[in-house]
Image 1 (cartoon, rainbow, N blue to C red):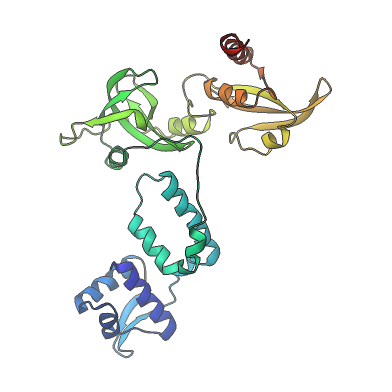
Image 2: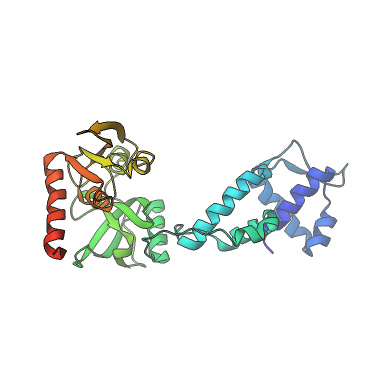
Length: 318
């Protein structure tokens, strides 16, 4: 049994009775006095104002300690929802199933039936290698470079030395924004296309490029979609017509989006303006709203959208 059960018991006993004796903890969990002392030290590391009182013949709080007050019903119900996301989607690369189980057993026993009736799915996800994710996180922590075998979208393999700056889950898939030593640029690498991290036991090399927070935030926030920094950022305008207007205008596309309701050629519509550096993803999403969406500007964006539709009709039309 892990310390989380014992710490919760100690905390609950002190709050209910003002103290808890060593003998009571030893008897309850069948542990040694030394283990109790280790649990008390762990509580102190968590910030608990716990101390032994000879007068009370047990452990007490010098002042109220409310670290477990987060466990109100609303917060726990949200935790229940979030834990189902982690369980069903593998969206979290590193998660302690044991810890989640212990929290559920302590706080959520009354919701065991409800928990069975909560799930989370996305239509387009891919599995990832937990070992590779872990290595990337370790690399960011130690600021040491990684040698990787990588396959691009066309299946072309290459070897890269990268310095990971940020790990991003986008649309159910994991990406790492890393400084690429070969290209001398900040690049986005699709984690599922990293087949291997080379030289696991070799001497790690420190980052050559200091993390540029301004560049990183620009890449994360400026452009729409996962292709965030492949070129100049331009504002694209898309027009949506009925019956998708309500669906579109309530959707969060980008933190810098602008949505305006208006009429065009006598028809009600909404115009969405978002910053984009690569038209690939926004074109893909517009086609998903066909025939109720129209690429408006700039011209090269509209032309690309028109060409995609013409190619589709030419290939599959009558």
